Amino acid sequence: MACSHLPQLQTLQPPKLSQAVHREECTQCFDNQDMEGGVEVCLSCFNGGCPSEERHHARMHHQKSGHPFTLNVRRRLKPTIKRDEEAAPPAKRLAIVEEREEDKYSHSTELKCWLCDPSNGRSLPDGTSEGKGKELRDAMMSSLSSARQSEVKAWEEEFTACEHTLTLVQPDSYQIPPSGLAHCGKCDLKENLWLCLTCGHLGCGRAQFGGVGGNGHALLHYNESGHSAAVKLGTITPEGTADVYCYSCDDSKLDLELAAHLATFGINVLTQEKTEKTITELQIDQNFNYEFSVTDENGKPFQPLFGPGLTGLQNLGNSCYMASVLQSLFALAPFKAAYRGDHCESCTEPLPATCILCQLHKIHDGLLSGRYSTPRANLPQEVAELPKADEPVFQEGLRPSMFKALIGKGHEEFATMRQQDAEEFMTYLFKSIRTDAKKRGVDEAKTAPESFRFGMEQRLQCGQRFD
Image (cartoon, rainbow, N blue to C red):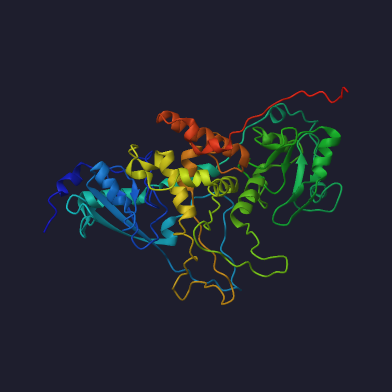
């Protein structure tokens, strides 16, 4: 029997570039598209809901909104092929590029009508094979998911010129011989070399993560001469870009006249070739590749723990400050009590992803329920790398990207992927909770952060005794 509500599908519009499509996980719990039931994505507002019998946030969304159609999205990891250890590794670009999801995963989708079956949604097997259903499916799957939207731009860094690069004064032109660019002027290091853009002195940089050596002679030259700007040899490209550092500003900067400044020393940027990583690229390598030790001082592997209150949080790239705050707060009784239960039934916000209470209840459920504190699933394919028999299997951990995007929205620091101070984040989180409570007409004294309030008293006391 054909669905009589399909004409309503024609009135729906694909997501706009600015709209978040919550297809990766439920907006009210951490059930995600990799689980058996997948995620039900509303085709009207693109909210993501889980179809699990225990919570069924997809059903609750239909009951509150009346939106008729969802697209069920399930994702499966594609098998990976082992590379011969003797084979040459694939070429890698030293750039921040968005990872293509379709290269790693396969997706299955299914259109459902909730007017036909308000409990579980009626499956329409051919609903996305052609026409409007196919148009909506293709547009939704090709758009950036909500998590990716908040991550892709956060890694980009914009460098600006400073007064020291803009007002750089150089001597008369002179040619630096190749021998003068071969190694540090004060030691024998031949990499991580920085050329002073004022006088042409060549010094080694500071030691960097990943085994990049350095004795800090470029910094020593700045301390002795006061020359601020230096460029890292090996990062100069024919396009005139390079890693420029200002020691006075203590930060990477942009030199708008880099090609002309290098020409003063006889260096033609058109003949240069990039051979070393910039500071930013080294930092990104550290963020993505650093592995914390999971062994004790004797080299014995730690044993993973599972159960309620024993759920970890994944690092979203320099988000350990947020993870430490959340783990600490939700170990306290006031926060456990304040966000226990399912707020979504009484929530008046049209989208749970924009409701701070929904997201705090989601964090509470994720960390304390124990539902997600399970060993990481392994691929069944023969080509997948399975753990050794004596190797412990840890949990996958939760990705609090939706919470981070909401709390950090509009904040110049917490909206980025840069490292932040945990105490500053906790203070800002408390402020956000109090602001939300005031908006809803709730007394601040009844919010969880009030458990941190304390009073101070100053008292003057005479220390001399009078008998």
